[in-house]
Image (cartoon, rainbow, N blue to C red; front, top):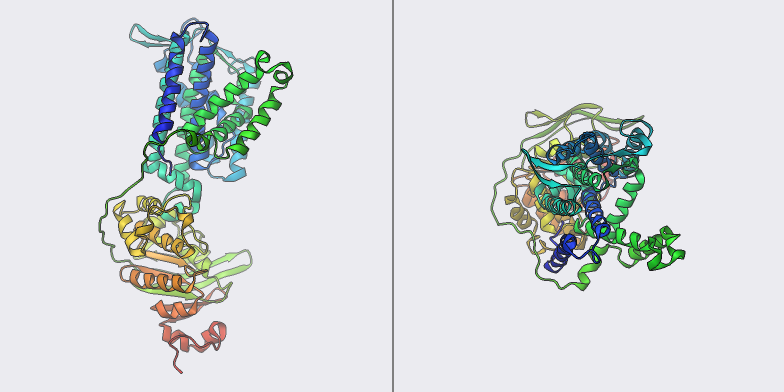
Length: 584
């Protein structure tokens, strides 16, 4: 999860902000009008880039249309500016922010349903449509851009408190807004809402399985980031009183992404540093008096080489490189207070006539079975028997073609993954599915946040799975068996009463298998466990009941001894192998 910058870096950032704030009172030969205007531009762009990092670095949404909201904010100020007088900041800026947020809501409603390249394409296409709208029509000056004759003023009653035609006033207002935007973004990311966003970035499938409606979370942050970009755009319109349609184009979004990467993805303050360094480099490379005409005439080539070198030298961006040269002064970690919590008795999980067809392939066919509470129910069968499909139907990943699924008296057949998780169904996956970039404790915290136990379930989950001593270790540093334990710990912290475990012993060594088997037996005292597993020794050692699937059909269901003696099961799956506990 996002950590607070250590005090050395924070001190450096405060010094930079202080120097920028002092520019208007410095002698003209040190900081003239152009230097103040340039500094204002950097501050405003930094604000926009920080808002973009909320999407890219925090949530994992690479938007090539973020500049559209920046441009909408700028045009919002134009729309609210009369021809012969100044607009009031208290009216024009909220309208600009609302316009940007509205655009983000409309675009985001479709965009965040997609992932990866498809998300990129939707945001890119949307921004280009907005660019064409303002460039090709006369809504706001067309391709010539829109001019604001008199810059906005901050007016309360009859008193003008701030005139944005004053460059010093605009710089100070922009600095204040940057501090607010960064502070709000940092608080948001460190909040429970932000923890979910970071979980979505690293493992959206797991977050849905824990009970989070990831679509709503992604749409919410898309709108928030768009609104913050709109604020930056509103300030940008006040620099020269001119709004070109190019502000909405993909090139501006691409430059903003470049600044995020240069500064350090997912750090927030690094994005602001990236904006500072990029704009300073561009200004320097364009100045022939500093770099010579050969370079200034072809400055994009020099800029490209410098950026490539920066990425190679500091792949984690300036935020990853800077702390090496700044003394560390303390740090913070997330901690929880130990609390005991009781898990309520699990309801019966039952299915009737459950079926799933993929095209012409029948994966599950008319399965009817009930899983009684506080027992381990194993599901076995050959590869391709439909076991994982059955688990996906129970969890809500797949919608059944036929049949019903009930938790107690509640029919959950049509409920989504996250809604079933809220009702107490937790699942593990064939491949370990945790949030590898989080610590053990943070994985459990994010799981607890979605469930009824909140933080009180974290200590219980860590104790139950034997991971108390690993709480501060990154999940990716754990052994395979410990990662499997962590996945189960997340389900416990989530408050799940029914655990759907898909091959939790796969890849485990003998000691890890023994430890996980003992864990399952212990959990069965107050959980319903549905276990898919190929390790027959472990299955017959831990299971209270065993169901056998063959070709998508349930051919047997009963106690281990009954399944062991079933001739049809032995012929279809178990064969003539001697099993632990079998009679001679």
